[in-house]
Image: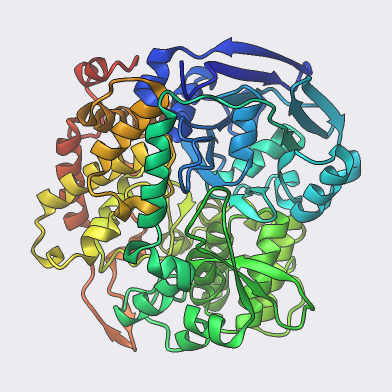
Length: 601
């Protein structure tokens, strides 16, 4: 089979053993690779009711058929497990040469099971799997861990690792790779920490041939050209930081823990200000022509740099009410080095700081607070205590969903999460299609699994009916599932004239298959239904598809109330979404639907 190794590497860190299993062609035809294949493997390898931080929860790394093709933006991999934040499926994507190395060791996916008794560093190369002692790496930052292993292992190895947050089982810990890139959301870093794996390094030694290299060579040239056009201009210039000014202009920038939709101090921290007043350089992922990542030199730090994109800028800035550039840059860098998801870290702190303002923090918790001089210093101290699980941080490391349940006193209403995953920087009270997508997403509050905001930003958005939004979210989710399984970067989505036609042709040129565009689209439907079925198996019910109570209140813009979305409006859209999916009114997948998609219940 072209384009695949046809192999899964199973590593049991409890017994320090490993084995290879065949990957059948019908599985990858149905689930492709990336997050789709990861969902399939999680469904197979995760016992029903497994605790996310127990030895029975597998940690899965997946490559894809496009990895190694040298097509622009295709050096991506997925990390999948049962999420410590939500208890449902947790999948994250990252871009780096690790994707190439995973495939280069002969694996289409690596499934890690069990838990080690002592801290280890895994090494996978042509000799097999080694279980090295990692006690000397404990407490080290992500960049220091990568540097140390690079010196120990030598050239050619690519490393994914956790920082102190992952070691300390912070529920929103991330997995870092390639000098700061993150598989950030849903807490996969905590799962890696629960297995006492500090790092995993791969060194590829083989190349997977494609069916029609001549056709792919022409496609590479065409996509390279298109990827440098108008569709990606903002990513190449300001990066995603450009969104901050755009969202402020549209009054959809969540600020102050989603109390407001506008930030009067936005100009000081905008992407434009960063580029004008700070030293900024561009970084490319492996095999990427776009270069959306912007490295900013942190003021008063010498030459220390941080990767900054919109979501981190939002979460370290407007969300917590901070407009000091240096604080935002240092906080984002700290999260990357500690291995924490910036969105969940910022949101949990924003919730806690509001609880302090309202005076509803238990006295016993207040005694755990670090000393601080001002709001900026408080935020920095909270982040540090969370990563270390010291003082109040030992409580906040559980995330806003769990901690708000512990406090009560109405604080659950402004804990800004869905299913336990904190919300990204989009204002659902004004973006109603996005509101629906956030509510029904299988991994919790997620902006990357449907791109529903694109419908809200379109010129026809005011005329969309609630029934139309349900269908749009379904189409967006299935489209995104195919992208995340092939895996394409979302930033090339607009360079295709017809995504399914062109992607099916590319997939066939790689594999030698004859899959047609409709079959490829159905893969997206199948993947999303399997993710939902996994969640149902793990205890999902209709009440989990919802938004925080605050979203149903009137937000403020410059002190004045504006219209919002109501609970009844969201409920109606959810019903239309279920109907468009072919599910019951309670969101359950009928058995005949599962059978038609080839999914075993």
